[in-house]
Length: 111
Length: 113
Image (tube, rainbow over all chains, first blue to last red; front, side, top):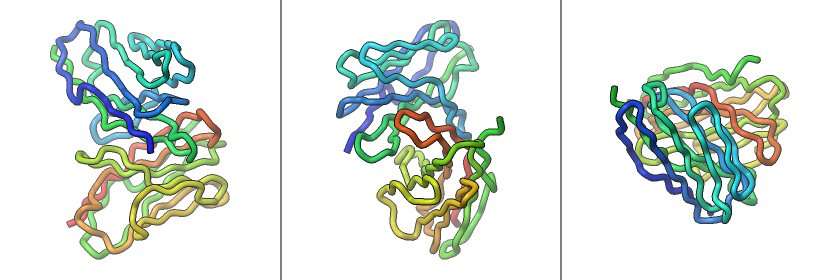
């Protein structure tokens, strides 16, 4: 079955700095989702990517899916304390209608 | 539009007991998925229901079961609770079509003592 590997596992960034989180799949991605989670709460949907080379932005967060559709990156520009949380990538597990997730990247923003 | 609602938010149970968790999806969503989240394993898929039928199942023992009602509301049941069942249980709803994002509730935090 498909597996999603996220890196780094944890990230501490000074407020105002840029950062990138990566999500790598063992198989071709046919739908890649990015979510954000505050500790102990539910996941908030950020964006979905489907096509190779696709890029989407929401406020200061940009996500890209590479041409081969096996890796996605999430980039945050000029980070703010509100960006702190756990970022998870999820993907349609081809063939069985379920979405699987990576283990997440825990982001801390230092004031 | 109201979001996904999960009840209760917190539960404390004893080993051997059983528990039922409830999930009300976003209006119009016919698919409900359940996930277990633990620090060690991350988000693990339990099962998905669509129009009252279990459409997909993860690799969990038979102690974990679920159902969906005609109004798309769903319940998850765990019998003979074990200490390792302590986790955040998340419910998510969607349209149930390919490339439909999941929309999550805030979860039920289950502690088994």
